[in-house]
Image (cartoon, rainbow, N blue to C red; front, side):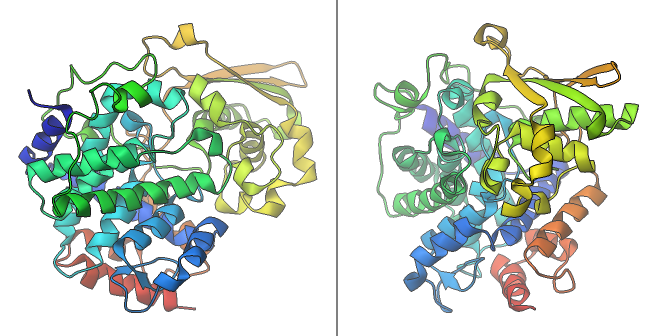
Length: 456
């Protein structure tokens, strides 16, 4: 009988062409993630990881390290994956409940920048394969796996990314399945780490695991191909009580990036805050009130979102990214959020605390959520003059239901570049996107990025 991993590998090999929409969205995701990696290079988390492995970073290593120098494919993926996720500005992918691109892009780039043999077309195809693999793994265990406390980015994300790297390396169907099997044994990452440097490190671990699992499969190491569904396998141990398994797994003619898409973040904080932020800003624009006019704000979110946001009174910028009270107060104060709102100084502003105390958060019950994939997040705002406004959002801005426009994408990229202390004089959004269609990722992008990092 064909196993689930074999079915997934067969699907990835059989899908040999992609629509213009799929390619465009993949290219946008790759560039958006590189922008987040650029912004992240000055953050403490990737700098700590780079310092831990500084003896393995040289000028002559195989793969580009965004914090500087070159290293092995594994170490480059580890550092760059941490950089991609450290500011929580990278995209979300609901079918896997994962930060899909923060694992996929660093893993694929660590291989693609190691040799001139990998073209932009190969990079994009491998990205789409890895994304489809993530969705396929997630099909059997989401949302139960995520609600149980597993960080899908470092579990499902790493397994799917292993398939993407295997496709980039040109492995056959059996080797792709084995790469995913090996990555399953590497999968870990606990949501209890949210609000600490360990959370972005999860993305780095998953990217490194994906690279190593694919390389090991290329060298003929293998594992059980029924490891997802068998007793003491992934579903049994990681699935949770409500996981459904893969008996009904199937694929559409359209790629998952077309039917479900990614959520490109507009706000640099945990996605669990985004729908409430967008809803509150909708009310602010419509009714014209200020933060000072508000008596109280009540929010209602999904159970997993509630669990992701434990910091009512954050003490630093990492905790602030996982605080509904902080993110909502800042958004209503200035009309939005930017990277400069997440510094140690900004996160502990005394004047903001009086407004944060007005904000409460509740969640749907397990019964309300049963059998429903997504419920809207609600916001109720009561003003001091007695007026009361309510609204809800099912989709955050940046989803395919409410996509960012080209201006917003460009503004985000330029914000990331400025945050790193660099200049768009040396690299532009369009130049970076051209990497995805170049004859060699290393020739087109690696040299450009190295020059960029050396610029004042």
